[in-house]
Length: 368
Image 1 (tube, one colour):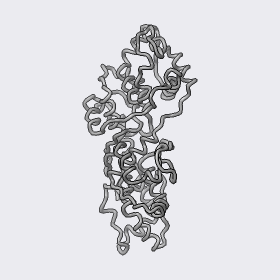
Image 2 (tube, one colour):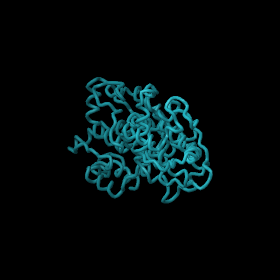
Image 3 (tube, one colour):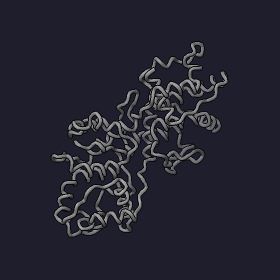
Image 4 (cartoon, helix red, strand yellow):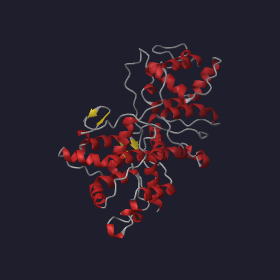
């Protein structure tokens, strides 16, 4: 497949992992963990839950990765422990599996596309002569399905699937009318979607949302459909990150004509599974720099305990290759108060980390 520029992004219901020290995370399970561990007593997600602490579903920067989540949880842990004790709650003991599920859940709630503009979208829809085949509600002369029937208005994975499967027939139909559909930028496609979603006839449609499928079977399909035959080396999709599902859909549309052979059809469930796999290697496979991580380890005074034989703290070198953002969070919730007590006794300040510092530190600990 000559699709060097596609990449999936979006929030997945199931996240599988390829990176060392990583495990699978499931957003649906994460929503249950959020309730069972009583996080919901203080925090809300998208407005549902407690109001004493920040809403964890509020949208933030696209760099909302596991390392970002781990750094935020680490930085605010002392304040959270104080609040938990003050309210008489039992401190939750989060496992690594549960941390991965929570990360998937938080990301799915925060996922967002680039901002779109309905006015620009109307211009693109008109300039590309889309209405000659696709009416908004009724049947256009071109005979294509009306926009009101498009599942893709509410499901970006369906958008990617339809733009892939129908690329050849759409271009042929347009060519018979003397229309050159050309390429679409992500911004143009986003604008068109915003325009259509906000039409009075379509506003009653269900709220946009999506869920990707399991990453393990997605990887198998990725190979069976021939994607892995071309996406190796410099064309590997592992080198991309921070993209959205509309980026993916636009790239599939633009590169489909360059395939040079018949496109393998992807059913909706197959597309969901491939999305789950490609997302997993981007989201949970965040890479840090071990050399920078060593400097973080020193600057944050981690060696005061981890490396000092008399401290009683474990030798982190024994756990090489097993560190991840989820394992850091699990260890924090299980051992954090004891760690903080020892640090207070040694008059060592509680360290805080940026997203990059956390990713670099994890990379260093796995190489150490």
